[in-house]
Length: 213
Image (cartoon, rainbow, N blue to C red; front, side, top):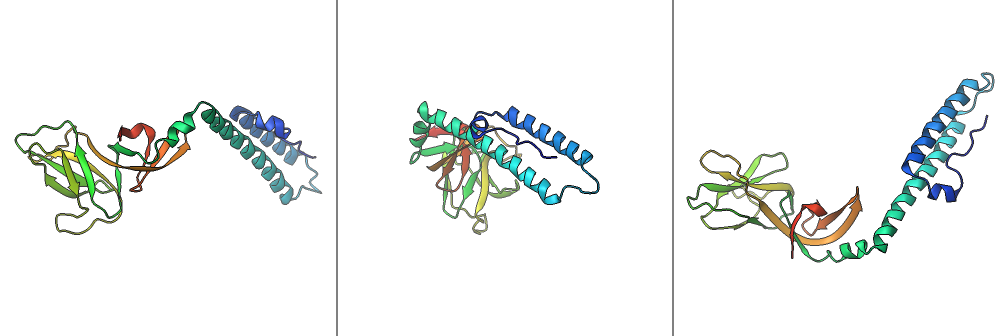
């Protein structure tokens, strides 16, 4: 018992939707189950035939999804969206997300912060959320450069770090934005949002950018 081709001709595949693919896959499984139930027990279908049919359907499914993504990209190009994103490359993006430390000093900007009593400190956390470095924030200072070392002068391992402001007296985290900035080297597309690859190795989504310069 042969299983008919799922997905139709190349033209119909190009016009298929994700719902069509899902429906086709369910139909494919029902047909294969029926085929197994009704095959001649004295002459069962060989395993390689099943594998071949599964591989054929998988190829059709992948082609359908590829066509969908291509259509979305063409649509973005037609509306000038891609050209707009290309204009981001080479600009400097500031963000408040975790940043990638690669061995060079990191400039951190503390926004909207007033502490005339000097009762605040900048804290650097590693990827596990453990405090790696901290220092008092001088009154009126909004920019601090972290050279990548801990209080003992040991250089941090390359990786992902984050920064926050805490009250020195009780170590409570304050609602104060701390941002870093780096040049945009590449724009990647996926999951409905563009991702920006920065020069320091950090990857952020487009909606994470606080300022561009």
